[in-house]
Image 1 (cartoon, rainbow, N blue to C red):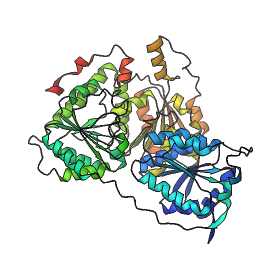
Image 2 (tube, rainbow, N blue to C red):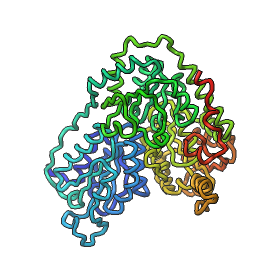
Image 3 (tube, one colour):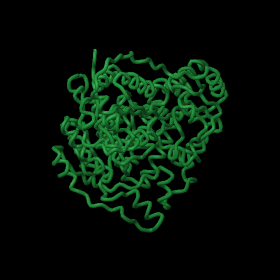
Image 4 (cartoon, one colour):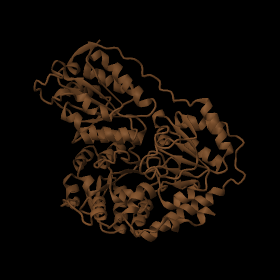
Length: 559
């Protein structure tokens, strides 16, 4: 049977379980859009910018655990996705972008085609793990098959397939291979045995859970292993939710705090699972981890990049912990439960310190925790409000903390939240955004309104790029070009058909969120409460010389 290249794309996507795509049609991909229309098997979300489409696909992937798919046309459209692809690349998110291209005969000849780019694939190669061009309709299934294998094998990262417009239009007989199974990466038996032996020798192990735990759906075995060892569990920002943060062994995500680092000195072994020891997580790579380290990581290139482990277990996080746990049947600690008291003391100490130094920040966290359902999904942009919540706001389930951690990308929050809400329609989705970052992609409110996507957007409005202002003030004694003239965000929201609210106190904020949750309307809340810098990260403490010295944090956690 003859089918077009566009029809081949749609059949391949549905065969791989894709039910939703995000994008914008263009001159060169109209054949693909016609195939989507005729199929009835794919839900298409029309975005207002290609960057928004790719961010939505990323948010969809992070919230669902499935691949996110976006569609772009040629040239500037694909280049508009580059920032989003880079964000997905840094944070190990499985994102497929299918882009059109100018007609095959013109590629690389610089003849002046509309949307022509001298080397389109070269532009996005640095922010993808793999990219390829389909030169005929018949090769499309093979390339899409390869794309899904790469997203599902090892460390997930974004991939791009470009298809010239004439290939999308052309008809050809096409064969469709069955989606290939993608088994979990099994760890080397020798490394597992070595890890077990180190744990046997350890008297006080501690666990550090990263994003790899979330990606591999390893939360259940993480909790079992932690309880078996009576080991406190710290998590990275992207690892929040790997263990419910009201579990007695959940030590939180504030490891950069001096009190947490003092606490860590009690332990003789760290089991680091699915973490890359990045700059902010590892305190500029000065974090004083225990001398003995077991590093479980699926990407062999990450082993020893920043910290040299005693034992490296290269494999899927879930499979690796399962195998280790099976070999530890006799290691239930004699004093099981002892760590519960210590963990509670640490978390109380960090909270008390922050309450004393910046009560408004703690009040923000308390306000959100008092009104948001347990399964709510928090999607952050970069802003001071999000900086507080990324460490202190408790998360209780995997995939409920979505943050642009590696690339630190402004404009991520709103579109990523739309994608997350599409993926998880029964869970409330809340955006934490600054006024600057919100304006990067505020037009995507129109997308949310068009498709009835009821996210809640909190805009922390200080009429500036506040964190940059503080840095300039600290380094140069004055700010420069960081103050902004903003629109009236309530009126802006209403112009898109959303509900607009303003909160000048935390009481008003709680009420506005409660009303939004009850109504299930698309809601934008302009938050004008003054929120100070969170004194958790080392870099932020450096901007506040009045902060206590590290010695003041040594207390009962050492006893």
